Amino acid sequence: MKARVTVMLKDGVLDPQGEAVRLALTGLGFDGVRGVRQGKVIEVDLATEDRAAAEAEISRMCETLLANTVIESWQVELP
Amino acid sequence: MKARVTVMLKDGVLDPQGEAVRLALTGLGFDGVRGVRQGKVIEVDLATEDRAAAEAEISRMCETLLANTVIESWQVELP
Image 1 (spheres, one colour):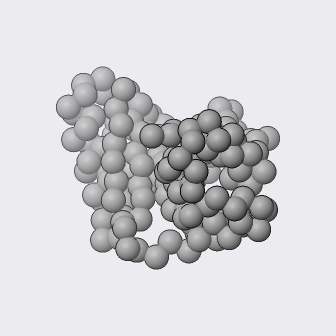
Image 2 (cartoon, rainbow over the protein chains, first blue to last red; image 1 turned 90 degrees about the vertical axis):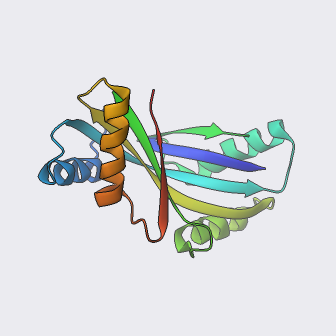
C-alpha cells in the first residue's frame, strides 16, 4: 500500500524557501502571486495492505522521523 | 485562489533523498517499508479567482521554474 505524507511548515513559521520561490516567480513576471509556502511530500510503499495498520505506522513515522512536529504539520493520504 | 503543486522525480530517476529516508526508517525498526520517494509540494496563493486562468498560469510556472521537467513530473490541485 502506498501512502502519501505531506509535511508543511505550520502557519506563522517563517518559510524562506517559499519566499525565495515567490521572489523568483515575481522576477519572472508572474505578477499575480500573493504568497508561496513550500513543503515536502514523501511517498512510502508499505508491505501491509491493512488500512488501519498502515495509518498507525505512518503516524509513528511522522512523529519520530518525517516531520519536526514543533514547527511542521503533516497529513496522510491513503488509497 | 490557492493552488497546490506536487513535484516528484519521474519513475526510474534515482532518488537518494528518498533512499536515505527509507534507510533511516528501517534503522528505526519500521520493517514494512518497501520503498520511499521524496518530492516537493508548493502552495501558491494566486490573486486570480478564475480557475482556468490559474491553471494556465501554474502550468507556465511549473515549466519555467518549479519543476525540472527532464527528471521531474508535476501535478496541480486547485480548490
